[in-house]
Amino acid sequence: MNDARVTLVDEARNMVAIHTTKTDGGCTFADLSGPTYTASAHCSPCLGALDDQSLSRLGDTR
Image 1 (cartoon, rainbow, N blue to C red):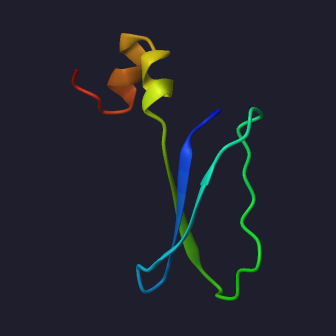
Image 2: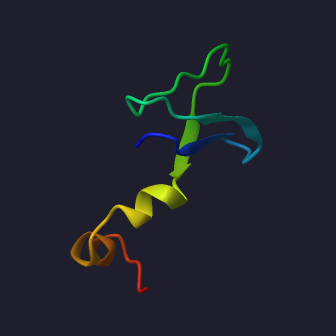
């Protein structure tokens, strides 16, 4: 996903960092000291490129 916003959260649910993915869909989080993190991605423009069948699999009920 290009231009997606990726949020990184630690085990205590504190937001550690937010990055936007590059054109290849990748992003890098550096200087992480904890053992476990959760990453989530959000890409509103990306949903516009998906067809109805793909949105259905994602649970979107538009």
